[in-house]
Image (cartoon, rainbow, N blue to C red; front, side, top):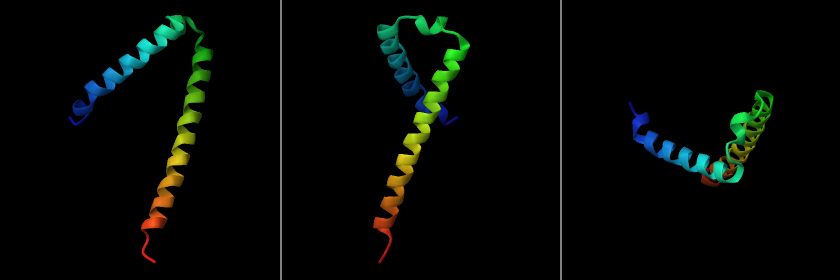
Length: 69
């Protein structure tokens, strides 16, 4: 069960993120309409995809630099 190696760190990071959100917004998110939450998730997916594209580009650049000439 390899996940256990990383699980405590993940929960610790999640807890810190939730506390930060609470300090900024209180518990308002728990009362938001599901449609609002779907919109938030869609925006997060777009953000993650964008960061993935940027990382892909940077890895491609690294490969080109390592390629023998």
